[in-house]
Amino acid sequence: MDDENKCFSKYLVIFVDILGSQRRTDFSELYHINKIFHREFETNQKNDLDHTVYFRKIYTFSDCAYIIYGFKEGIEDERKKLGELFSLNYSRNSFFPKN
Image (cartoon, rainbow, N blue to C red; front, side, top):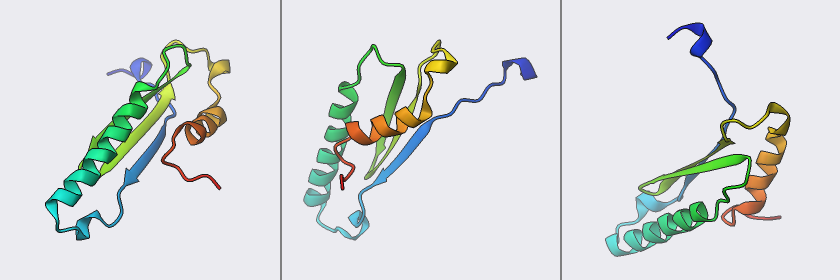
């Protein structure tokens, strides 16, 4: 790959972990919690809107998740406002506690 084809983009990446799940020994309880955890992220992903300047990808595994926000391809630089991406994320995700 030559230098002309290299590019970097800024993303907002959030890592979420269910604390205390390693200490759980009841498989049914752990399965129930993980099922709710994954379902909430899947539901949240379905709420994404096509007309926005950003995209969101959610990857879940075990009791953890990565949420990745970035700007869609073809969006002009003047429309890429990283600060708004941060505040949008905070306001749209119900799993972040509000003060």
